[in-house]
Image (tube, rainbow, N blue to C red; front, side, top):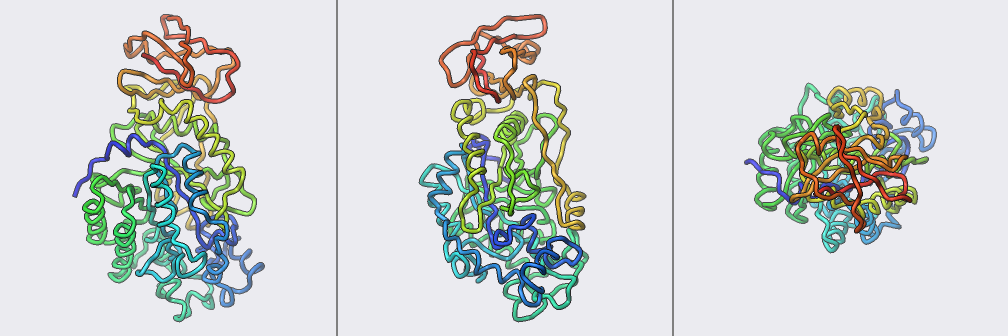
Length: 461
């Protein structure tokens, strides 16, 4: 089966997702705690033994009752999505840790029967849809093959009684990205059935598959994709690397970007977190909204979407600084979003001095993380007032200026070089046209005085 990327996804541009699970209880370093606590050479293992005790006495399963979700409120999560300006959103349905955040009959280790005793996926989807937000279900559970296998032979993961939590004991090498021993049919069937269960119960608009889906047999993946598109004809799936055929969904570059424009729609997933983590940690740091706005503009100008992660606290609440920064992104979109939403890339994506190289969290980087337990930071720094990104809609051209120029003048080379006939320029969010002049090199637009620092967008017709 093939699937063309639907226009609604290309129009949406911006989404949010939320890494939330038992790993949020220790909240130490990153969401790979569930794996790294079992590897003796990692700081997370040392931390775990010092704080919680030996792996034979306190395993990952023992965090599950501590994920109470006392402050979880799907209305609060939905309000945050709306405040951010995002058009699609969803919690991580299941990470690599075999903990399902939906009402599952396939997997008894789920959020309805344990922990918060709430249907996180179902409640969030209901709240999001009431606000006109498209829904996203993300799946990382192919990583479960070998995920918990420990270098400590006494670890609780090897006790047959705990197989329901961790899966069967496997050779240690199965926790590699590309193991010799690939998943057996039983694992692949459960992998498939978890996804199908979410599709049938909740009908997500988007299915997202994390990396390492390449280890799942093609027949099982094909069954999932065929069933999803039959159930949700206007749905779309995203995938990483070459884990699925290119014609069945949208390529996702984790923490990545294209250097230039792309002739096909794509997505990048990245973090609001400025720590190298996708979940809440004990001393969280967050990127400034300006960096997210610049990233969004750059991605959109190159025919992409940005899916941004925010990790809730173990109780289901959000850190105040995360709320502050993502709300600032939403404030910007409420003024300048016309240059982002429902647009398409211009024939030239942009101009300016900042060079952005093509990046992706590829197989080499994944293998490095498997060795060290910690991912390398892929963050791109701030861009300048001379960096411009272009989008287009109807007969208008939009110039997104990635910072406010100190002298109050914006120099635009691309419209003149591409022959775009300019009749008027205006600053989005205002009714005032901008005065501009033409030089042999381009257009010079004079901005109103008193604009705050940060990115802005100009409409050109």
